[in-house]
Image (tube, rainbow, N blue to C red; front, side, top):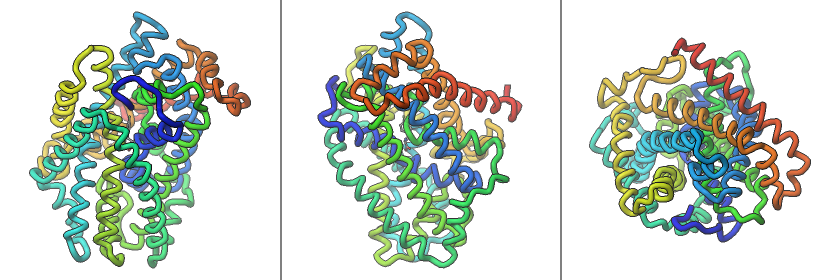
Length: 454
Ligand code: PFF
């Protein structure tokens, strides 16, 4: 995204920036632990169906609205239907992005801290190594603060182009490292049990929670539902094929998540860890794996550096949502508002940072029922903002695009420079107008029914 309105320099630049937002901790940290908690392969299959059937068409819808209006989400909605309540959907996206950034920043802080831990700690990590790490509040809050400050500095300067250049080199490097780790992990004794868990579906493990988690994860991982892709879309030139671009982004994102699982699950079974360890899963399994590898300190540090950068390209896009809204619509100075918003996010995230054993109240928070997510504040934030509000936002935006703006208008926008879309246009309209709203609505309503929240 750019601070002054302009168009992407190249099609690749746009695809990389949108992929940079999509690919992050959601793929490498969240996907494996949610898969582990939800019984493995059957979850993965449902997740992939949601990604292709709902995530891909919905991403195209956000791009189409952005490109047609050339505005941020709130502005775009106002332009299509002036003076109405729909603009609150844009505001919902802003609240959701702040909620997500607050807990995401905490995990990004852990990732950053693990660069140094990997480099300097020797020997196999003790079983309580990670819990000791995250229950040290000074350390944890410090790392979290550093990550939010770095994000804010980049958004402040508006120099995403620099980050874009970096990610062009570093993201392929992350993939190469992933492939090496996949090979290594799968050669360990007993790793095949992990492959079985991860790739051979056992549908008896599918419950209602599995379906909500798969839906939430699909939208979260693709950065959908906040209107972020409307903003990205507002910078796409008419000559870019929206259908092909979205397809690439969705495939990149799914491949990175699937690769992460191909490392974690074989390693986890080989090392005798528990797949349902929750948010700490990758921080327990990976350091153990690195400690067994030749030059593991460096491999580990390289891995966490690349993961921190992947997280950074996502946190930048998350902070841009409230900042660009305030700059565009409220005419405030970008330079000032960045710091206010970042400080606010930091405060909102403190309970998450303190919820991993430091403060009992936040550790056993449990406002949302345990049938939905774990009791700690961080998991609760992750479910409420990252699954529930995000999908709810996607539902409302989808209804807005499909019914208020009109799926035909959106389809016509995608057709511009999108010849290969013509044979899918009818299906796409059906998915956006009917299938997506119905599926998402049924799932969201059942949360209330099943858990008895009303
Ligand atoms: N998609 C990011 C990830 O998977 O790490 C997280 C994210 C970024 C979610 C931006 C939502 C968003 F708007």
